[in-house]
Image (tube, rainbow over all chains, first blue to last red; front, side, top):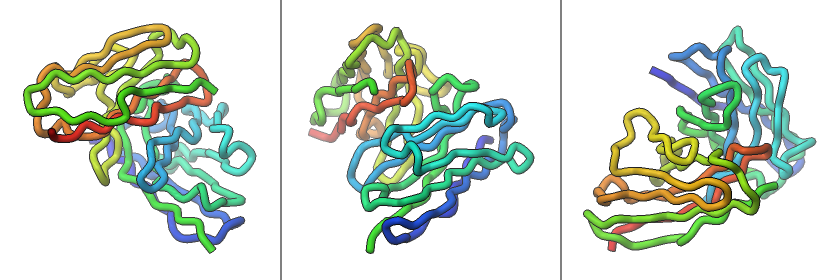
Length: 120
Length: 107
């Protein structure tokens, strides 16, 4: 059974940083791209970033480019999202998801999310 | 970035109704579109990809169609467990972009 478990969220002041983690199990992690999607309270889904299976290629939403960095450690079956220079508008639940390919932008398994709250 | 526009933003329907949700892209995206269902407090769930391919395990009352700039998600006979918010997501080009969502609630 595929499982994705996010962690690392919490409260942070504007300008602060966090590192989100997503631990994967139940599939061949090193074969698939992985993505992060976020959802602000009461709002819709926003795609954030994606990383290919070997970590060689990454893409970002314009709203986070230059502030967020996605990475992965295939030896630990974990994908990360380093979130820097946080703004109030980055407050959201952050979901990680498994891509069906490498990548094809279709996300067939999701974690339950970790909440990032940015406020002073 | 490609803009995805869903309509309606919300709708009220009864069990057994046929429901159609539309998603329009600001430029042609071939058939590179998926549909996701999200219930309150839960993670999204993949329903359909490549515009019309049903994800394994998803009931056949869900179907998708379209290509280019206009796409539809149809629920042929709404069931109680289908009351949720539905999102389209283009995977034609990065950055990927979601529609704003369509909330389906009980009439």
